[in-house]
Length: 81
Image: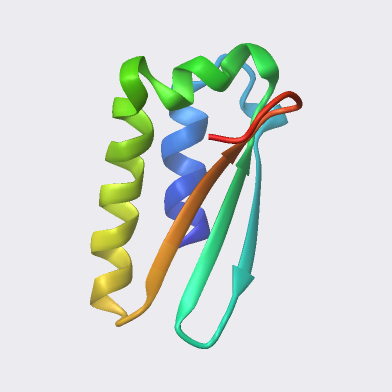
């Protein structure tokens, strides 16, 4: 799951070397925290959060295949989306 999100996010940003994905596993839920450079946060979130929601939808579908709930959080130095 982490590799999928990393691939998607690195394709969107200008500074792919600054993308960091932290994965936390629980019994029934997996949390993925995406950390990007402040300049790239808008590219990952998108207008009205459309790109962020698209990433969440893709990850949710992939998680459903494994019968796991997946939460995606986008972090920057300033705020959390």
